[in-house]
Structures are given as structure tokens and as C-alpha cells.
Length: 387
Image (cartoon, rainbow, N blue to C red; front, side, top):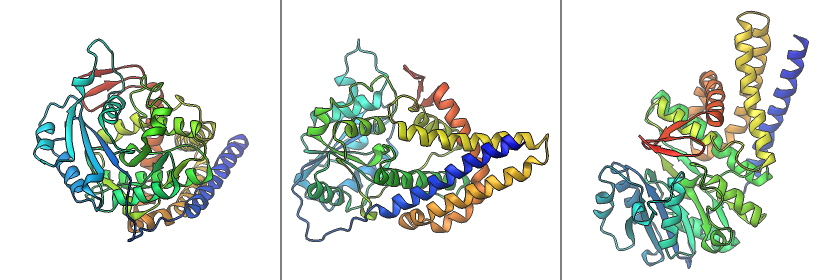
């Protein structure tokens, strides 16, 4: 019992220090303010991989048409990834001169096995584009009117090779979507803090920009095609290795891209397993150490909960860890929730903690050892199979 208390004390102490570091990193990350006098010069190519997105791609593209950015300075290329619905016709119905759709199948060698379809779609879209700055997003994302100008302003001012920008989950008020909204907001806050403190490379392909020149110099997605996921994160790692200190984070409400969370618990778990599947597939000792600490704490709490059923005295230790973990996370999340306008939703945070702990343990385990299904494909670490 003494040994268990010592281990628990060390783990929770390190975790609380981590949350305090994240809070500091978030606050140190400068807020980017829009400049009404900004006159953009950068030509931007927006690449949107799409698979069976007929119900959402139209709204995504209409948001691009509403951008406060010169029409002659940006293009949007939708790369259809073997859709079985009306995705292509929905894109064609937009009928805008700077928006077009290409078929991934037209650019594939039939004898070449493909694992990472999304990376392939992005690479094909980039190859046929002509922008100096590449901006990736997803077919179910909605960008605010000032999105392009805000990204371009930071790019022109600081000349980074990559710009990591915020993404937010909307919510219909259901438990599954509220849970995802808070969980994803936490990850977005960590992304910004980790970038500022140089505690690991994190990004999200729903709102990621990079220069064409830098992308070509690092060989694009070469070396990562054997992994089905990680188009964003693994590219960020390559950029950081090739251009240390040349990645910028854009902390601006004008640049927040919003998207809907997964509709049910199974889809949510599949998404998180997909994200966790990158674990152990990259060289980033700082991020690996952080992820290991987070996983160990959550696993420890599950073990303590099971043990407490046999040894009731363990409930006290479990309760102490639960409270300390909760307070540390709320300390970090309070300013993050203010940025995303979600402080009112934090009252649910304590109630959702048990569910959060279980999903971290399960998704982490299955992501490292298991398979998952995504967009009608069954994915393992080395192949993608159509269902």
C-alpha cells in the first residue's frame, strides 16, 4: 500500500506540474490581432480531401466563397477520395472559378498499394495547385470570413515554414458532442502551449498552413506513407526537424475553423484510436514522455478503481488523485475555455471525468495494438482495406 501511494504521489505531482506548464505556455502564446490595413500579397491554395462528404462539402465551400480575401489570390481544390455519394456533383454545383474538384483515382497507379489515402489525396492536390502557401482543411469544416487574411497576415509578417491554427468542435447539446467539444478544446490548448514551450510537435490538418517551398524541400509526405493517419502531425515533425524554430502558432479567434464532432460514441472512439495510432511511430521524446505520463495517470486511476472494490481503503487514494487531477486540469482549461467561448460548459467537466479516463486508456491501448475503421476502410498499421 505504501508503494502504491508513493507511485501515485509521484505521478500526480508530475501531472500537476505539467498542467501548470501548459497554463503558462498558453498565456505566453501571443494573441494575434487583425489589422484592417493589411493588404495581402500571398497566393493561397486550399487543399480539401473529401470522401463521401456530399452532405457537408457544400457548406464548407460556401464559407470559402465568403472569405474576405481577394478572389484572384486563392483557390480551393477538392480531392475526391473514391466517394460513393454525390460529393463531386456538390462541388461542381458551386460553380466558382477558383474552386475545382479532381479525382484521386485519376492520379493513382493501379499497381501501387495505398495505405495513407488522405496523405495521397493531399499530395495530389498540392501537386496540381499553384499557391505559394498551402492551407489544408477538411470537407466538414467551416472557416470564418477572416480566416485566409488572418493566416496570410501572420505568414507575411513572420515568414514561417508552417502555421498551426486553432480548430473547434461545435455541439448540438447532446452528451456525446459536449464531451467531444470539451476534450478537443483541451487538446487544442495543449497544442498551443506545447508549441510555445517547445514541449512537442502537435497540429491538426483541419487548419494547417505551410509554404510550398518548405514542403518540397522536406520531400512532402515521403517516409510517412506507410502510416494511414498522421498527415498533419508527422508533417509537422518533419518541418520542425528541417527548419527548427520556423513553425508559428496562430492564436486568433478570426482563424478558428469549426467542425462537427462525431455523431455517436463508436465513431468518436474510432477517431481517437486513429489519432492514437501514431504513438510510437515518430521520434519526439518530449511528446512521447508527456503522452506516457498522461496515459500512466489514467491507467493508474483505472487500476485503483478496480483495486478499491477489493481493498476499500484504496478509495481514499483514488479520491485524492481524482480531485488533484481535476483541479490541475481546470486551472489550465479556464483561460483556454475563455478563448474558445466555452467557459459555461466547464461545469460538466467534473461529471465527465470518469468517462474521459476510461476513453484515454482504451483508445491509447487500441491505437497502439489494434485496428479501426474510418471512412468505410478498415485500418491496421500497415494497410487500409475497403469494407
